[in-house]
Length: 122
Image (cartoon, rainbow, N blue to C red; front, side, top):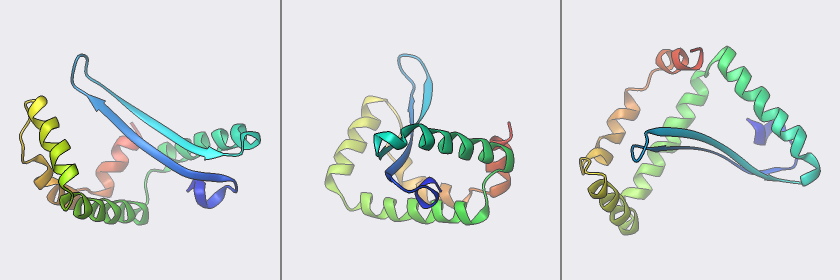
């Protein structure tokens, strides 16, 4: 939403990073390119959007868009030898099941707005 609402922000990205070893953790990283003069106002806008998300939750339109984009990304990745090489090596190194990626389309279909919003309000 920041990209639509704010002028002068480019390439906004939200990324979730997680790791099992050596200590289990996750991090949410929000980044964007912008005019340095707009930095503070854009950081404030991101904080306001996160507060709104926590207070009001996700709307169905946003969830549908996420699922659509993830499905498209899945299709593209599945055609890439480089993706498979990296994925299989990562799964092997972590001693995790090699077929998790194949289950992703089904997992996307099981996402429900009510469940997502339960986590937004916690």
